[in-house]
Amino acid sequence: MTRQILHRAAPETPPARPRLGFLGVGWIGRHRMQAILGTGAIDVAAIADPSPEMVAEACKFAPDAQPVATLDDILDLGVDGVVIATPSAMHAEQSIRALKRGVAVFCQKPLGRTAVEVQAVVDAARNADRLLCVDLSYRFTEGMRRIHEIIDSGELGHVYAVDLVFHNAYGPDKPWFYDPVLSGGGCVMDLGVHLVDLALWALDNPDIASVTGKLLSGGAPLTDVTTQVEDYAVATMELETGAVVQLACSWRLQAGCDAMISASFYGTQGGVSLRNVNGSFYDFTAERYRGTSRETVTTPPDEWGGRAAADWASRLAAGERFDPAAEQLVDVAKVLDRIYGR
Image (cartoon, rainbow, N blue to C red; front, side):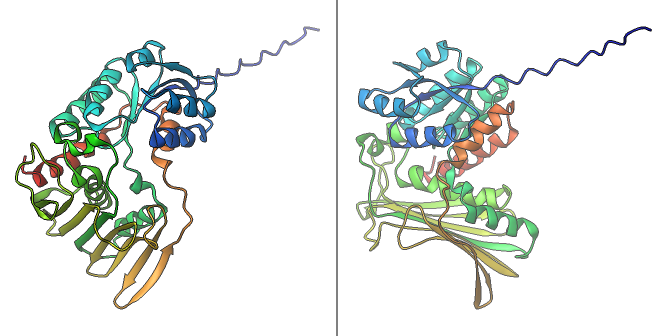
């Protein structure tokens, strides 16, 4: 009797965990590192920051990571992705350098100071076929996720008006924020970028007919965007759909609380709104409006701050490459350019 030999198929080799480098590990960089580590999908290979103290703090979360001096040092280690949390003027150049080396990028906002810079980064990501994402974190609040679903369902009818606000009773504490060459602009570049992104993302990126804006500094009209940055701004976008989007943002407004943040969408059959709670930067509630009645859709707590970073890391670990949705980053940058009159 012939003995039958059974051959088992060799198990598939699991994909290697992506190895990441972190460039800039101040508070934001370390917070995003914690969120990314929380996915359990990646390893931290390298950390670079001018401050030895910041590097030491970051190494507490990733004790096996190698402290290095520069972005090139990170890239020379053969990492799969890099998380960039450096001053704004560096974002585009550093992102392009990484992408040209075949490394995926997660970058703090703004990705670039102008639409030309942002387009160059997106082009580099497409050419390299690497995943590019930016930390536009308010998209990832549970409230905005639900608002997007409600708008997308058609429940609101034709959305014809959008009001967005981000007033910060404080101002940035680093000098480079106030240098337009280094920052690209003031509160619009810092806070308004979130508002423009939320409007276009929630409405599925409609074409824009016109953009107007008014910039102030110290309570007076901004006279020279090449030497000054604004600390108060209002802008209006008219969309090809006929909708009107109005936004206002500021630093150091006498607001009576830490922050005033909201994104409201009004349609022919109802409205929805995201609002911060009791002046908080972190706690939000979302509501659905029908005439004079309102319904609560989401309430705090909601640990949303690191979700954009965690989402990028999880997608990278799953093998995702260039996402054409990155072109939406250019659309946002073009709106900012028009607010600044560029």
